[in-house]
Length: 254
Length: 330
Image 1 (tube, chains in turn blue, cyan):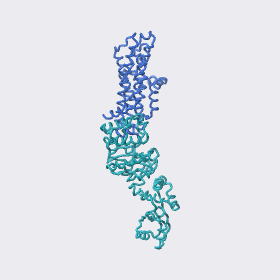
Image 2 (tube, chains in turn yellow, red):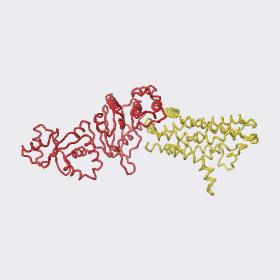
Image 3 (cartoon, each protein chain N blue to C red):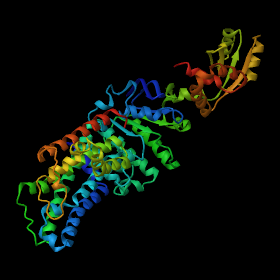
Image 4 (tube, rainbow over the protein chains, first blue to last red):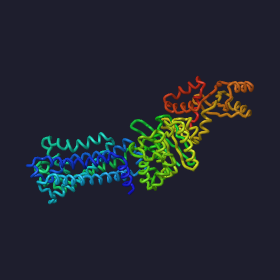
């Protein structure tokens, strides 16, 4: 699989992906330390594993920016043409890139979530933060899957928009604003929100979690589907967007 | 060998490349000549499968670029020296290219050595001067030891030393039996670099010939003669071992052109000595640049000013007709 080797060399031979990955991991772990370390002792007593994951959403955004940049910088600097010249099978090349970026994002997701849990456990000795339910394992290990799939969506959007600023705006505004704001639409708003892709990514992670002291997405009552179906649904969005991106990249002039 | 057949590229209402057909032969440097915006780069992108032609096709040894297996071993190209990630080192840039076509790691060092970048191989490409970027681009093109090489305006912005280096390099590549296509808008540069020429203007083919033929046709002075005793006078001149050429010029019928840097005085006296009636006797002078501009400029406005061009050629003693000649080959 030479395309994977190609994209691995590309990704690791510039510095910004490294920075993004480090920031992503540090954000989740650091915020967990702050949340649990600085919480009043009353809250510390009721802290749960969910409380250690407060920074993960932010890290996910950083990872998506990294993934989008992996493709948009190729358009910005013209290296996409050199790439397509070297590998005229454009879909294969882009899938190679997606694979490398997604695997790495998944790895960062797992490191971040378990790191955040470990540091939380360390700074907060007054609550039992042992991973003792399937739902908690899903929350921590599942973060890797969500990061990987988010990265796929980000690469797809980047390949379609071909421009860093535009792609990043879409990738930030969509999960953070659009999916929340649609709820304001009368009658259909709640349904739109329940069926939105990133809402389902969260639904996969937080369904059935003990939300503990902070409260949060875990206590939302109206999920569209069970956690694993939600993951599959999110993956479906990633696959659909990637397919559109591949077809578009193969047809359009580079 | 590169072969274009009826190659056409439209962007909306704009026709960038218009029914272009040409051949590029191996073992020679072929110049791809045309003014800025003539469609040279678009054509090169189509050769490389980056842009899809609206109609027609271009093949490399009978295969479309997109169907090539490990294309870098077949075609090397430098379209833009700036197509490098500025924060990636020269070596890393070549390393991913080598990996994409399963080329050995040694090919990277070999290519770096060939263009003289070994000492700066680990520096970031963004810090390179244009000349160094150009060399890196050429290293990328040579990576797979390809038979066919494309260079788009490789001497643009280079200092004299760099220009000579590139020129010598192209010849070496062609001497090794490779097919080399070099585009430029600088005719004088092409006259030094290329053995064959493909000349385009506004996306249309204007001429395909050897550079020598093109230069001969375009430069030097020619005496234009219009006479009712055309064949007789041509015979007289041929007896004096003068090269003549009879061409159909629009609105003027058959016209006699006497080549070989003669003056109108000599031709006029020859006509008088044989009692030949002359309707016109003009000296036509054209530098390469002039001829090129007229040829390509003409192709831009040809349809709109067809008749005017013929009229002005009577008033202007310079080489308007030189342009008309090869154009009619289309």
